[in-house]
Length: 100
Length: 311
Image 1 (cartoon, rainbow over the protein chains, first blue to last red):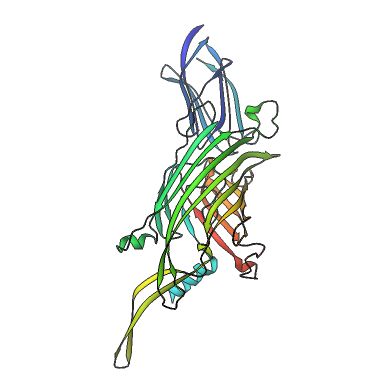
Image 2 (spheres, each protein chain N blue to C red):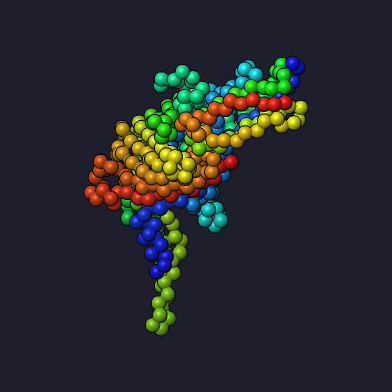
């Protein structure tokens, strides 16, 4: 186990609402300076092993594209693209495991 | 001849093409109760041959878009581009919109509120606007009087993105207290001086000092108006990219109350259905014929096209 710093970024094609990110089970605060299109926290510290549980959910009308990236030490360790409404209307949810 | 046909077509269809208005879902007058997902843009409004610009500031200061402030400022010349180019009197018109919104939770949520698919906002807003136009005098002099109008609007509104089964929809509604005028009800007229020159069997007629303006009984009135905008985005239409719906504009009080209803299709940007790039509407004006100006229901309507780009 070691404390590492992550850069979390969620970018929508338009406004994303109620973005929720959890890293290793811990909630991550996100901020937006462009009206809710780009959500980011570049200084997320977590005590992690070689694998991290990642959770992300966001809301926007179905068909809204988004891209979610996790960067550690300048190296992108996770990247996923999708659109809201793929499983449930107006919502996207991902659960995944990142291997560091 | 071609010019006459073109003018007839425009008058019959009441076509107005609006490029990139700041309000994404709007009626022919540019009004909307939907403010969610507003973005910055520049506007070229060919509907009244004018150029305008708008600036929008959305402020997000928490982990969600719980509060936001929007400012929209647009300016244009009173009679469009030609007036600027020809060096006539420049009287800039402006629209200033200010609104403050907050995330709310009115409807029931399921076990996880973060993934319910329901997004709700309430907002209050104020709008200030001015316009200038010429009004034909009623004294048979065929001269115009210059009119200035300063209007305002105070709004309380509600927006929701939700779903009915698997069908996503977006609804906006607002109650507005406004000072409005009836410029849209007036007839457009032109006056000009003519002089004729006779050379042999030929006659040449010159038209000069052409002026444009409005004719009719002009008034301003304070009124309460109710706005409703509703759009659904079924998956079968280009993966939610095309929405269908419309709007209702009800003037409840004041002089010449009326109800206008619009219905049509909107095409959103790829990956962003609510950023409209193209809209096609048919607007039914005065659906209950309260103004008693035209008994033929279909003749009280008109087509409206909207094209836009957001950044």
